[in-house]
Image 1: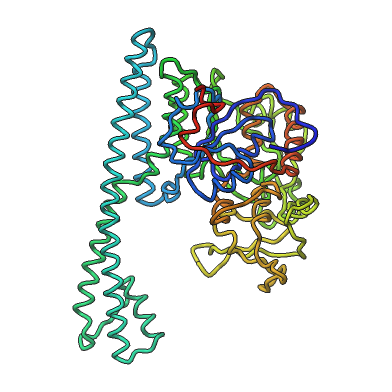
Image 2: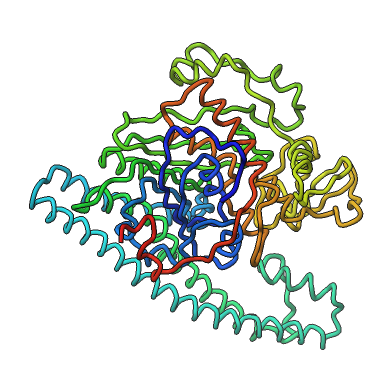
Amino acid sequence: MSHTENPLPRPAEFRILDLFAGPGGLDVAAHVLGHQVTGIEWDDGACATRARAGMDTFQGDVRRYRAAFFPRAQVLTGGPPCQTFTVAGHGAGRKALNQVTEYIERLHAAVRDTDREEGEEKLRAWKRIFRTWRRIHEELRVKEEEAEAVRREKRHVEKQRAGVRKDIRDRLERLGMSKGEITRFMKRLMSRRGLDVSPDIALSEPLKTLDDLNARLEKFKARLEELGDERTGLVLQPLWWVIERSRRPGSEPYEAVVLEQVPAVLPVWNEYAKVLVTLGYGTATQLMHTEAFGVPQTRRRAVLMARLGEPDPLPKVPETHLPYQRGTGRTEQAETLPLETAQTLEEKGAESTERAAKPKEPWVSMARALEAAQQVEGSGVRPRPPFTVISNYGTGGDPEARGRRDHDTPSATITGKVSRNRVVHQGTDEDLDDGLGRFNPAEAGVLQTFPSRYPWCGNDLSQQIGNAVPPRLALHVLRHVLEPELSGTEADERLDQAVVALEHWRPARSVEPLGHRDLKGHPLSGR
């Protein structure tokens, strides 16, 4: 990797293993801080980007690897796919959370029961823990197989339902209904509310068939919610890797663990933390607002941090920027936000007290981030007049009420649909000309705080960018967890240097993704 001419001072250098590594958001931050990172990622597009960026990567399913394959890794990081939990307010989300919590507690019970075993008993204790994991793994495998069978049958019924709907449309056309009338009829048919079907239009038979098919699909949906999906097993993987390294005879525990995901996963991280405390880690979970860490975007991430042998709980990552408040300008923030009280600072600890002397910076706007990126040679970021971004998503439950953010505010959350957001002249609905009406990958990446020359490659670039960890957020978390000896001014200087290095980062050379056959001789494998 090639980054800056003047390398950053490195208090320590760690070998990091990044599970579900994505296109490299955490990895590029770790490299800037001077650490060595190997990622495991299955997505072809993300692996293509990682290859172009020179990121060391094993391509494949995390479940086909084990902690024992990488004995020299000192730090475990990752963000297991947890989309199921984003609907935590609904039945499926609650069931998924309850299910994964139950599995974590079973693993925790096995760890607690074998906590004080030594000598030969330690091996027998490990076998008991491993048997617990194998039983969970087998239960999940059986559920996945049944779920796949249910999904196949569900797809078949959905195909039948589509045929019945087409039949109903054809009948309505033959009755002389206009396209608009048919569209309104079919919309009411979806809800079955306000639907007045006269018996003389001969729809009773297809409507009854449609009702029967809908009832079958509801049963399939309920069964799939009970079974969960493969992401339940994936979210357990990082915990199992930590347990294996901590309890398997002959293994050394990871020195630190950092995991991140969407806010709905915070209850899962809290359960993780209980197990990690039993394994000897000091832990902290934190809901982080990205704009409070210099990311030009309002986004929330749930983070779990753990450090071996440290007191529990760990201190939270201190914010460096002010939170975004809708309708408040950057220059007004300091005047409108309440000052921290002495009691609050005391609760946050000595480092926060020391940092309180340094005022927080205003949040970073889209325009500021993009203009800074334009100064980097070969960035691909284009100049724009004042603009407004119109989101692809609706707001307030109204799909037609598109969210809007002006150029002098942080972006709304960058998602996998970022390429569909419209960029218009400020205060209008008029698209910018010359191809500026959409963000290109370099620009969307900058709003995620990727270097402007990050080599996005492969399929579905928007999805890669939207799913990635913002590197600037990762800088703060990694610096905080891996360099606890730095505080106050030293930590600030370290971060300032890292941010500059991140902005001017560029890939040195491409590398090919690795597979199982490449474990032998790999720096983390010990083979």
